Length: 235
Image (cartoon, rainbow, N blue to C red; front, side, top):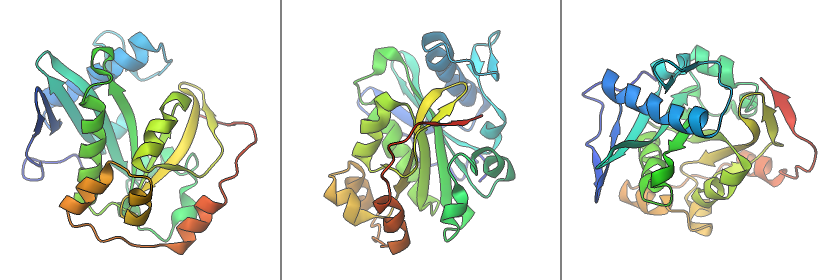
């Protein structure tokens, strides 16, 4: 999926003092890269080789085809997350092994997204920013016929992702830059499961009249999630 053009952009979402947009202009996208840099490099001291220390930005080649959500408050940009789709050769090359995407060949690559680079400035944690990022990326996925959304999250964030409906289906792995990560996937139209766990996504799904769909082969993958071994290492 290409980065959204002007005619593809949804209207900005507002929630009190906060607003969320699809970052489509160079300025908006650079603001997202700066939020990432602040969190991943300055705060967490992650060793990402793509970090631009002179411009204080964190970006990579996948941003060229990504949909990037940017949230701002009255003080400026404060949160971001991005999504890429698996039909892009670069995206497939980057994530096929990490998420074992071959296990999901029954889903068209255009309906498989990978969310990454979730970042919220310290001053906005515990506010609406995180909820807005999850809500906007979920809505954007539904509006673009996405069925599966994969994410790799740090142990501290696993309960948050699980609350929204992401499920771990592989053992954790060790990323050389990010450290230990849990590999999780969200089935966007699995309304029965989202309702069962009281996911915040249920309200959005109902607003968009999403029809629930059962896939028994996916349930078998989740039923086999009994990972107790050590972490795998990926690059």
